[in-house]
Amino acid sequence: MPDLTTLGLYSGWIYEAIASSQKGRFNHAAPVGFSTKDQAFCELVIFKSSQTWQNIQSIGEFALNLTCDLKLFEKALHAKDELDYVKAEAVSVPVLKDADCVLELELVDTLDQGDRGKLVAWPKRIYGKLKSPPLNRAQTLYLENLIMETRVGLKNNRELKSRILENHRVIAKVAPDSDYQSMSRALLNRLGLS
Ligand SMILES: Cc1cc2nc3c(=O)[nH]c(=O)nc-3n(C[C@H](O)[C@H](O)[C@H](O)COP(=O)(O)O)c2cc1C
Image 1 (cartoon, helix red, strand yellow):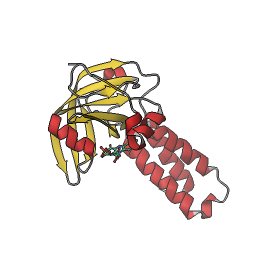
Image 2: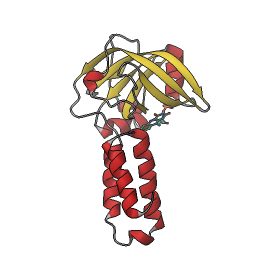
Image 3: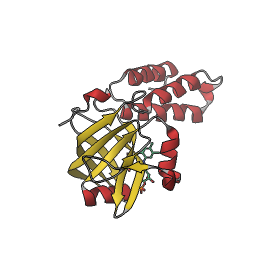
């Protein structure tokens, strides 16, 4: 079974991808986050109200398309018919032609989480070459916090401070135990926000 180590994913971090799936004759795609604990299985938390959830539940297969091209994310949300698909080899659902790297996955477990569900899937095939590490939000959020920290008048600006705290919350969620999390914590300390 192919493992995920070649992708350079940190365990527990949440990366952004585009899930491709199928409903009947229709190709489908939508942005999703995914993580791995063990470099073997992928985990996703998906709203049960989404088409993606329904497709994966009914077919038991899907693909994660990795790209840093945000135009593809935008199309996957707002211009789905502009996406180009090609056939996968190991699964019966289509994959995105313009993805840099593709994980063809089989669903192995579904865990109920109220209005969402956790999907656990194993990669039957991984191919393509990443141009840069898969998208993770921690870097840009920490950068944003650094910029906000330099704003004149920050001390009395409640809105700015709550944005910094919210960014910190997300950094801890998407990049636990990372340098971004510890640097962000230090930033909160400097501002007396922790
Ligand atoms: C970058 C990004 C990441 C997302 N991650 C998730 C996710 O992990 N789980 C989820 O349920 N929705 C996620 N969404 C929201 C879905 O993409 C969105 O609800 C979409 O409309 C679902 O489409 P569908 O109903 O056609 O499947 C994300 C959106 C973006 C832009």
